[in-house]
Length: 161
Image (cartoon, rainbow, N blue to C red; front, side):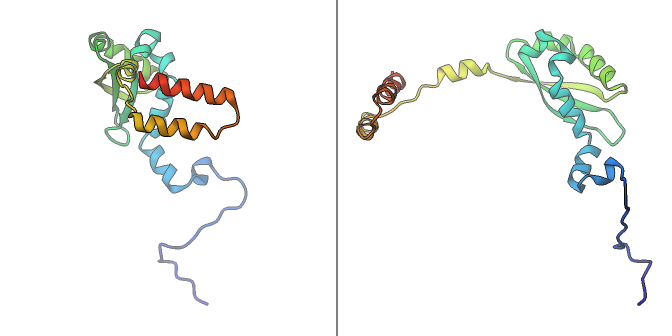
C-alpha cells in the first residue's frame, strides 16, 4: 500500500502528554485567538478592576479586539445620569485593565447608556382581565392545600392592582 505524503488530510497522533492548546476543540481555539478570555476576565473581575463606585452604575457589555496582536475596544453600559463620571475615568479604567493583564489590551473605551432596570420593572404593570381572573379562581378550587389557595388568590389580587 502506498502512502501519499502530499495530502493535507494526513492525521497526526501524539501519545502521552499534550499541550493544553492542542487538547482544546477548534471552536474554543477560535474564541481564545479572538481574545475571548479577555472579556470573561474583565466581566468576572469588574468590581475589582474599576472599584465599587463605577461598578455600581456600569458593567462591561462587549470587548472588540482590533486585531490578533493589537489592543481593542471595551464597550461599557452606563446607567443614565452617570455618563460624565465614567467619561472622566476612562483613562484610569484603561490603565487599570492594561495593568491587570500586563500588556496593552485596551486602547479605547466606548460608553452606551441604559435606564435603571428597577425603575423599568416598577413601571410595568400587568393587566389581567376579569375573565382571566375568574378562570384562575375556578382552577384554584381543585387545589386541596388551603395555604396555597390563599396565597395564589392574594397574588392575583396584587397583580390586578
